[in-house]
Image (cartoon, rainbow, N blue to C red; front, top):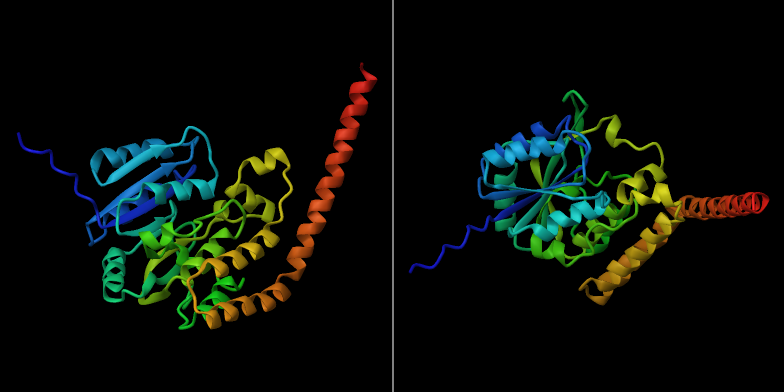
Length: 313
């Protein structure tokens, strides 16, 4: 009796983590399926959406066997949901995709070719065109992030608040990505992840603009706490006190320590943290102020609640 054939393992995995993305989701998936490079899988993790996201995903999955759709029973947070797509990926190369962005048809083809031609490159990404909610172009963004020759130069560039982390949607070697800490549950952990990748290999930017990143009201956050809730939904319910900027700083130190760098490069990377502290001093002070405010008010709330319970005992 013949042995059953092993299912074909795609060379590229695309991870699409989504929550309530019905408005733009179909267009995003269609742009992925229209890629000229065909040897890929699309791994979708639906983070317990309450709109028509699930129905849209199931419809596409029924039409194309390259799509694997999973629905989480509970919202596990944006960072954890993105990490699930990495854990489920089977390809040699990996790329995250957002439910509201659009890819040019040759994006995968050109990114795969660039990684094949440059074995020392960890991540390749194209120039990015910003678009609004209606698809109108807003200009090119994300130019040259992390392409510096030295690791310290890449760290300085990617840890700066001037860039917008567009390279997080680049095509990366899966084994390199899995050796990182992936996305963590605090705001700006995507910035730290890019820095960790850049300490493991240089980035390469294609000269063409092949990625359309959408900016609209639903993906803009009014403050850091609203953005933090994307990473960790229970934050808003629990009132947990967090120190995102301090956490980010200590994670920078950790990824420098873990990187396989010569001593000279490692020391140069540590030196990059000195101006970073200066640039982020106000944010670090704000972390402490917010923590003190929340701690004070939580104690007042508990004291008031206990007083009320005594009153009615």
